[in-house]
Image (tube, rainbow over all chains, first blue to last red; front, side):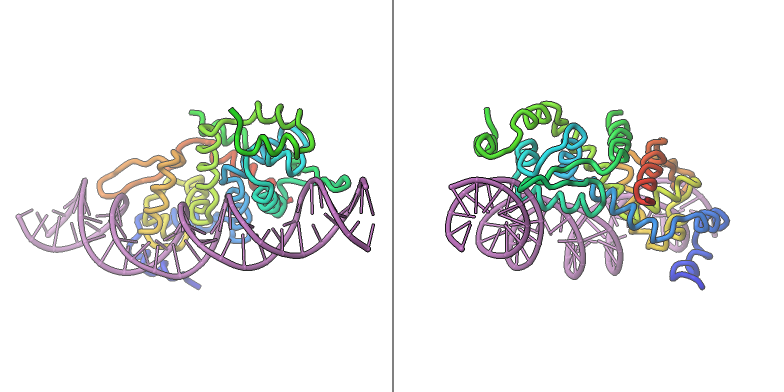
Length: 119
Length: 119
DNA sequence: TTTATATATGATCAGTTGTTCATATGATTA
DNA sequence: TAATCATATGAACAACTGATCATATATAAA
């Protein structure tokens, strides 16, 4: 019924009522974890560049490799990460895989992130 | 004048004009890097919980430790990361450091992120 | 069917990350 | 001043990440 730290904190912490209130409001692990995964996925320069490129145009793997200047293998590996997070979708046309943004959330996250960074 | 991959791609890649166009639009490293750092910072469950807690209330270090159930040392280390990214600010009152969200961008990022995750 | 092309995947490994433990700092109290 | 409390910091280490290289798959062309 109590976590490892509660006992210690009942002696120790400063605002017990605030702690309780915020603890109740706290998002559960099943929400926090996927959210952390999403941000972690966007927390890499290569993947951000891939997403930004796909914000501009539908592109295939070797186009993407050329745009951001890394190997096609590296691009393919990172596209899989983006796919797992449902940040990109793709369609096959013959041998070529065309990648697209999965939805508009990425644009919003990009915009908000840039706003924070550019201050 | 040309990157290591350009030569190879002029033979290889599928849509040279698209590549050029997107390459020109591509954000430069000085923008991408801090943006990646921002998302990377939010890409950790502990730090997300800290931010979420601070979205609800101003809290001190030991309160935060109690809320999310980790050691105060771990909290302090992660708060430094959040401070470096200007995601939180703080004020001292005697021995106690009170932490707050630095601005409203975090709320927007949280909201957008949750929207993506909860689909 | 053989060959070539576009992409995906597995193994490897150096570099990074997050926690823990021990110690240090800075402010209050005795 | 010494002792105590709240927080910060440094070192260390296991766990994770991302690029590379080699290899595999899938489609198309010969």
